[in-house]
Length: 354
Image (cartoon, rainbow, N blue to C red):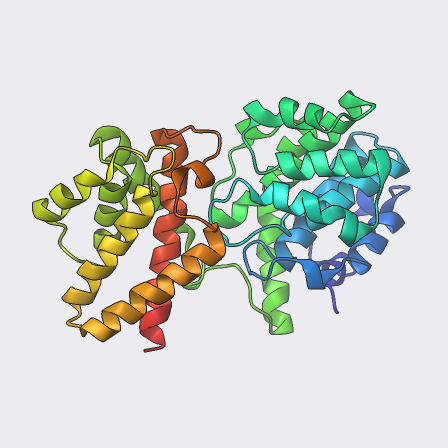
């Protein structure tokens, strides 16, 4: 399959960043990098304009710069590029899913054929990329690599390479990048995203720029609303998702609705059902009534939603969704964003196909 990235690298569209591209082309492992892009197993990648092939190619380019600027040898360059290539193969959706790194790590052996220490180091970095920085050291150490420092460095470089592409969701904050080499490429990452999507359009392929599929402004507004409801208003998960979804669909959220959803618990407890799911189902009923849908239509909509929910999250229980037991606004706020956008996407898609 034709590679948009390789097309760009063979052209002169880089403007003020052309010297950077020339520097990359003079790197002793540039051939290894282009070979990695050419041999990328695109069939196993997550299918999405947001975390799919385009994201992966851009992260691989950022990884190449990280490897070059930090003096990685050929072996570690190859490991980093492989981690960049397959770090999102465990995704189930484009929204928050801090376990997708672990699922991707578990696929690495079958995708790459790697074994031994190299596999350990790649698995450590791929699992850690979707988790908080405070967990990074523990995750890497948990794989027992012979050279812990080397493994940690690869994991950090993957996080930075992945983080640079957050420009596509308007959420790149350089203070969260670990290496100066990554920080200096922040402007480059924005430019890369822009010309990459122009190349996709030229090729007649779907891009992650704009459109209804992934509206970065919508995501940011939703995230801010969730934070306001959970931290300032003290809403539980069900109340939060109900209020936010009502706002997204232009439905008045009444005091009676909020009072009813208050019974769902604070942020969920252990073996209790997740209040975010319960809030989403409550909103489904509100939405159907506002659209004067029949009981059969309501049942169909809720039933299909539940099937998709279980396909993605596997369980209704808090203890399964958050096995570390951290039922806090900080953690559940991220889950609330995921659930809100998942529900929003489902309802809009359902309505388009009625």
